[in-house]
Length: 331
Ligand code: UDP
Image 1: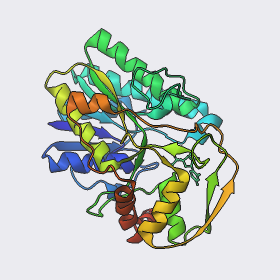
Image 2 (image 1 turned 90 degrees about the horizontal axis):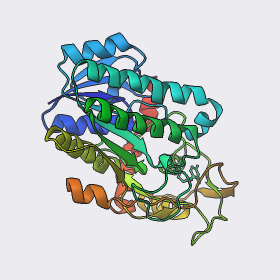
Image 3 (image 1 turned 30 degrees about the horizontal axis):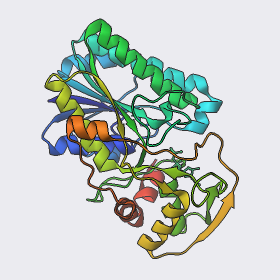
């Protein structure tokens, strides 16, 4: 298939791209390189460009004879989204509509969308199911939810078929060591703890130890980025074979606390470092664990990296090899 991957130079996008290339697909990556890295694009055709550029989107659809789209390009910092809501509505929602319009104009009917657990907000029940209430607590989550709603309207109106994948906590790295997670600034727990193990940071701060959990720190559902990537392929293939539009959670179904993550990093790396309890971070729900039963049943998705130790080991390989520093220094 000729597949357009938006945001293919980012952390998750580059792992999706690599999985698509392995399956023999023709891939065109569109990325504005605001947060992504050109070196993370390990094959296919690369176009530096932005979703604001309607002409470019139409040109790609036509000239590259796109048959399916995997849409990951987005701003994704929850904190920033609370300070600059317009940036998130504009980039994640309005510019996303440019993409849908270009698809419809060129009769491209299948899209896999990178959504988020942030669409749920504070959950009523754990594990979270796809039909639970969606009341996002951040502009980031809301911008993704708005786009999901647009997808439904485009399906009703034009027959656009979509799979919306609500990621929980993506983590880990390509076991072949070619690509990994290199956000700058980094806000995610696992890479921050690994940077602390490497001595790039002095200590790790636990954001709150007074949550109603076993050890008082927040619990999250960490899913390996290659398992996430595999789900994108399954979802797009299912759409190409005529499957109806759907929304799927993507997590491993296991919850780990911040303290457990830190202890596991210490075990995996064999390094000790300072840990300090600090204030809660605004907007953090105590527990987020996904039910991923739906995608397992409907698309036969089977995560391979269900143990936290394995997930962290792959990320550690990447960080230890200087991957993070290489990327962030190259800019
Ligand atoms: N966290 C922490 N210290 C850090 C970074 C994150 O204690 O330096 C906590 C954060 O409050 C949350 C969990 O780790 O409870 C996972 O945070 P992350 O930003 O990785 O993902 P999120 O769940 O916010 O998408």
